[in-house]
Image (cartoon, rainbow, N blue to C red; front, side, top):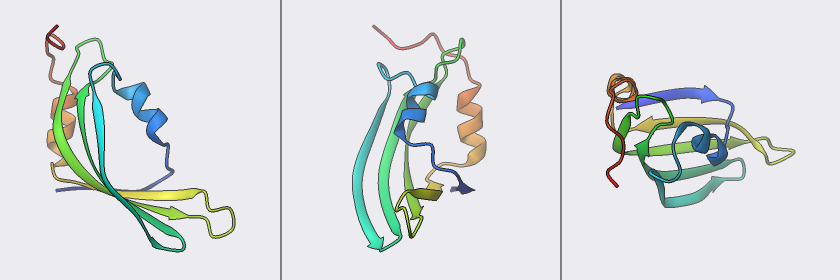
Length: 102
């Protein structure tokens, strides 16, 4: 399991900068408000990264806890856990493929 520490939340738009939307997917399985300042989500992500060597990220699941600013209710930070290791995620990012089958 990989845990990503608190970072500024970039949102789903940032995924489109890293992942090719035509060959990738994000499935949202559950999202709930767990406190006045916390939202939690369970999801699965997979696809091809927008690198010249066309790496494929195999499906992996994650859980994200979003902490909201109490005044603005905007996302202040996020904490993620994944069902794969950080080493595997990095290895997949640098493993070349021929790209998606057409």
